[in-house]
Amino acid sequence: GGEAQHAFSTAADLKELCQENDVKLISYIDTMSGSASYLLACVADEVIIHPEASVGSVGAMVALMDRSKALQNAGLKPIYITSTPGKFPIEADGSFSETFLEQIKTDVVRLGTKFAEHVSEHTGVDLKTILNLDARMLHAEEALDVGLVNKIMDHKKFTAYIAELQGANNAR
Image (cartoon, rainbow, N blue to C red; front, top):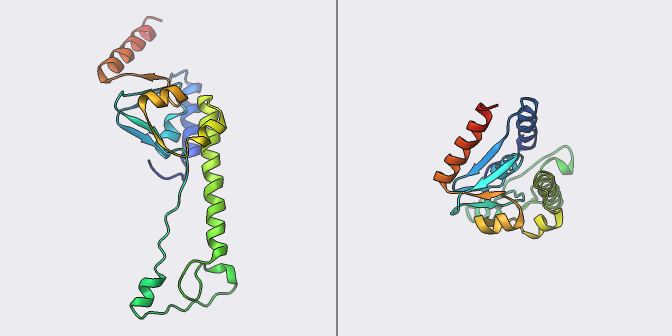
């Protein structure tokens, strides 16, 4: 997993660097690759997954904590004085304002859609198919069937595959 900040530009830079230097980029998912980890992995020329691994979580989220009841139970009443109503996202009772929550939801949906479009662009999987996965994690076989990965290999087969590719490159 991970956070989205800079993940899109990092993925683009990684892909560009490999293309400029004629390097085949291979991602290997050993146990789990979700969210920002998969955002980076999917730009590879090949995405290979261990048979027991999982991949996905193509979506975005923000976690917020409404502490208004805890403050109230503790006998505390915060007072906020701002220059404009939108400066601070908290209502007088300490809960989040509906305007703020709507803005966060809009931003999360935008980011999740951008992520799904990124995956679609780099995997060739239809955008609607990706969105219909509902940000689930998929086991190796399901991920292969959907097109989020290209091959399934255990560690031994993956090591042999990389050695084979290196041998072919050295023979050039």
